[in-house]
Amino acid sequence: MDEPHYTVGQVSALTGPSVKAIHFYHRAGLLSPATTTGAGYRLYTAHEVWRLELIRMLRHLDFPVAEIRRLLEGHDPTAKAGGLPITPLARAWRADA
Image (tube, rainbow, N blue to C red; front, side, top):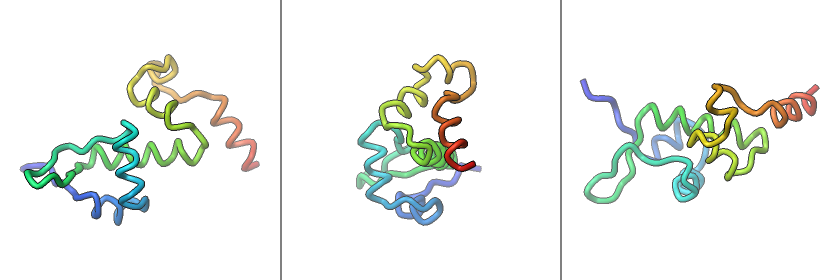
């Protein structure tokens, strides 16, 4: 059975960010659709929805877009080690404490 595909509007309704925000993440090189229809509509799978949730979490922790892109592309040494940089996470946790 084929994996379900979701339109940008459906992804927005499922996850919370606006369609405009999802388009911004696409233009910024953070989130690409799984496929595009002949009419140009972007379609996403569960994989891209998961990636969007990760992007949102990192933005919530005040990671800049450029740093998120490096992490997602695997150019950051900590990403290759399977973890996230400790310093921004520690700052966020300390702020909540």
